[in-house]
Image 1 (cartoon, rainbow, N blue to C red):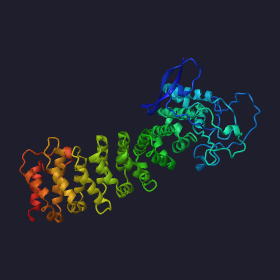
Image 2 (image 1 turned 135 degrees about the vertical axis):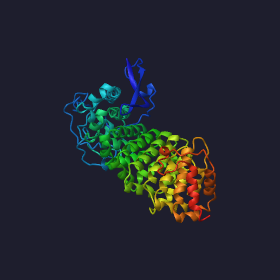
Image 3 (image 1 turned 90 degrees about the vertical axis):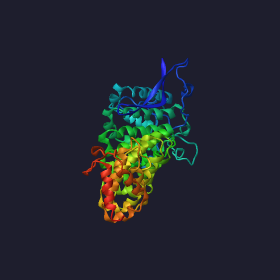
Image 4 (image 1 turned 30 degrees about the vertical axis):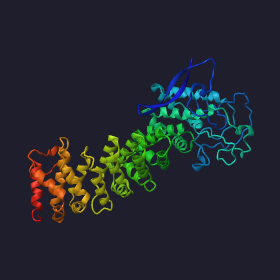
Length: 504
């Protein structure tokens, strides 16, 4: 015999994250308090004694056999319910007869369900068992009771609830909330369950309320995992991103105290941003709240996974962009500069790569005379200090292909210095970066209005001269996407010098 207790470890399984358990041998006593088994969950006092359900979601009579208990119109609302609906009709158990059940029994049942929910063959049957999701939602949304008259969780004002029932109940009731939402986390891992669960009446709203209002850090973490797991299904992405409550919740969770919650929330956002239909809405949401939250995580979060997810989310929004999305991102305060800062300072190679790729994609759509064009040029100049990727050099080359961009680029001292530094690289792995910079310089010299500026730039002239007399610098046309007829950097540079000859 053994008692199953949940650990705080999560791992990727099937289509999402599963909450696992550890087996602890049972001691002499039949039932032991969670604290006796080393549970890390701090006991908290929660709402009224739980109601019980049968397999069809119907409530049992109380354990004392009192079937004639007086009915009461109980107003036992879940966290934040009053902000969403005053008459919850979809959630079984919110307006019920006030039954007295054994909280320890309910706790043990939920632990069994939580354990079974991580068994692959049981996930789908459990999610489709009539009444089970409603029962889990009811347990998940039970709110704590407070003796403080000013607390929003104090029910002493309700005369229909016996005075003795507003006092704290068994500590296992607190853990029951965690077990209920953890069970939903595991069920949401199965691909067959994702669509069913996201459209189950009230389930997504219940998860959103738990994420926003539950005082338990572990419960909020599990709520973030549920949203992330459900968002992995392609069929759910557009529906979930269309829910303002989901987006607002993810923004809030990005600043949660728990690093795991922030990681799962940022993962949900980059998953939702994989769909073109979502990016414009996400970029505009509440005047750029999502962009700002991701920007702050990118710069300040100490957790690598959270920063990586934030960078990938910004990259996905930039890649799956529309004209409106590009303008929103380009004009968002300090966003482009933050991407450039991450490129040169973050110690995670993934953060640097996603940030650089985001700038590269934006460079293909932000051009003069857009308001954000000058900001983009500064960001590219800053990011060019990291030469382990071709993204920034490619972005500068792409910018130089547009005639309207050439004069602003030449008039931007930082851009010319960046191009000169990239063109002067002589490492064995720098050939592609160097080739992109040389192509960009040559294209800038084709604009007559830029020549008098470029001829006075010492770095540009040094790069041109050195490349002209180099015999071993070759450009791989396939590697850099070169569309010129030239085969070597020396020929390109001679052409550039010829273009500048009149000014010389």
